[in-house]
Length: 217
Picture 1 (cartoon, helix red, strand yellow):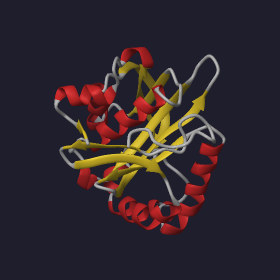
Picture 2 (spheres, one colour):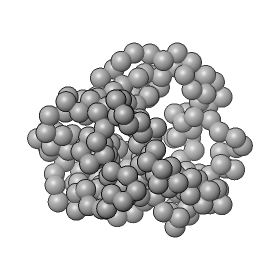
Picture 3 (tube, one colour):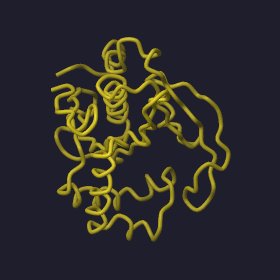
Picture 4 (cartoon, rainbow, N blue to C red):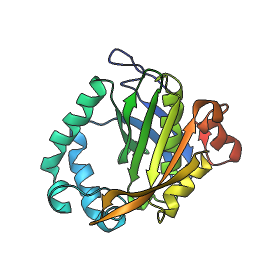
């Protein structure tokens, strides 16, 4: 069901979103959970070469950061930020199985009402519309029950696939952030992209459906 779930912790959380049908299968979002750990670790370790060049560096080696034993602390931290109303951390599901993550982070209320969106999807689902549908579900939710006005994303200029995802959904390029994040051992430039609630009309999922890239289930 679209947008089902209580709002006892903060508006729009916890919640399950979708599913939406795309070329790769049925895409949905649900809260991350502790039992995702084994699959999360397997996909992250398998896709190191695919993911490492786009993601911020962290302490330790890739294998150390993404061992199954690292997940409980990470998952608990994500869910704690959700309880404080500071983030909405989701698992991306493809045909019901864990296939990546998406987070609406740094949720700010007041006169700004904004968040950033960050995501990754396993390599075997690349190119099938999974990331596009996941971001569309999240942003529609952010501009609906969550009550935000602006969502932004930062992407390395070389990451053509991610830039295409965001452009397809109506994100605007707002400029270059020089030496913004340490990625793969170097300080890397990133493009800043953003979209506001009044720019998406009937919503991002509706846009994908009209374009033939997705349909409701």
